[in-house]
Image 1 (cartoon, rainbow, N blue to C red):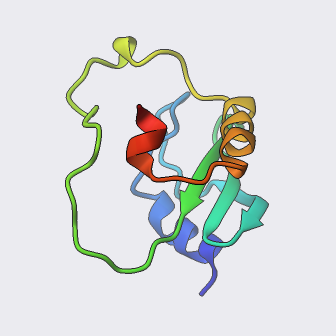
Image 2 (tube, helix red, strand yellow):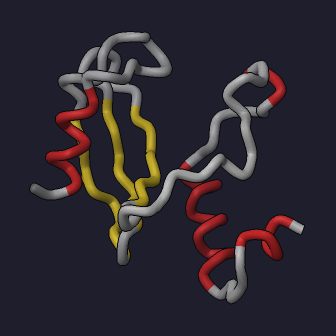
Length: 106
């Protein structure tokens, strides 16, 4: 089973950010894939809104608390939506980084 099949099976659990409809019938397109990371284009079947999602597949590890907890913060404090350019800029900026997460966040 490939990544797009897994995402299609899970899509019905999510709603479109624009129209609120289920993403069960969304269109998925692999835009980029490198190692365990992928960039996938998601198009809502109802309103045709298109979003890009970054997907990372990790080996099975022990569950750890997230480094930054943002689920309980009001969304207006988190800034605007992340654009495709934002994701690509971050990927390019991190491509040459050689260090751990703690040093990156300092």
